[in-house]
Image (tube, rainbow, N blue to C red; front, side, top):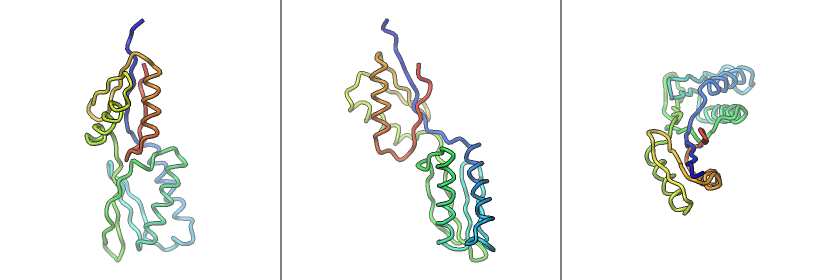
Length: 163
């Protein structure tokens, strides 16, 4: 029985859970004393989250609340790319957070090199925004998953489609 086993490496953010985390953050903003009378708000535009607040301190607190809600809902905080803080109208500040979906080419190459350097008997290939890893031994595939979980990458990985 020399059949090949495989799995896919993906990096996705559940947008429904993200919407829920944003709604919970807005509820907490409405009830917190330090945000009373504040112009703080969050808006989701496709794959970008726009945060607006009175000053940088409140913007930092807003990001902390959002991250706590994301962690509570099982969403990876690593998949957020923080933009620069810019001044907006009426004396407020704005920051754009890009929500990363899929594995970009640079990270895909890094993952490929990590797998190749591990000397395990598996093959990996880039397929768009995901990677497919194939090998004869399921133990080798499990070893690749453990290797990638321990690796310090700039995005959160999920392992799907194990066959």
